[in-house]
Length: 108
Image (cartoon, rainbow, N blue to C red; front, side, top):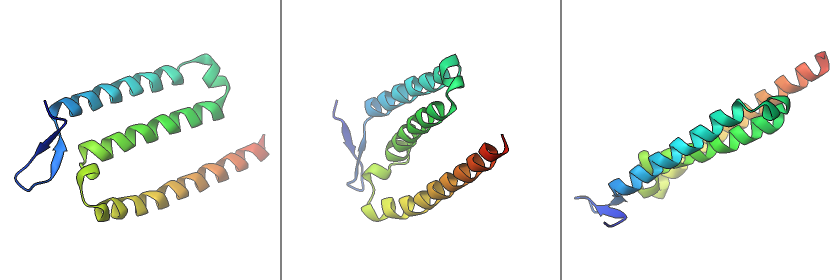
């Protein structure tokens, strides 16, 4: 089976096998995330847990956007239009996390 399937518009998309493989990978990463969250060592080391879960979530997000939203196969302009607001949202989230962390750090 070919890894890409041609559609009437001429754009190649992933095959069903590729989508199933991505689904299995997403399931495995989700199981790792849940297992990490409930591991006592990670609960004692909050910032390690935070970064591990953030990296795993970013990986899953990339797979979902790239394959299931077909962004991987679309024109580069669509990718830029999607990634620019996403980068702003990530930056704003980082600022809020930093401000919250510094506020509670000085309170304790």
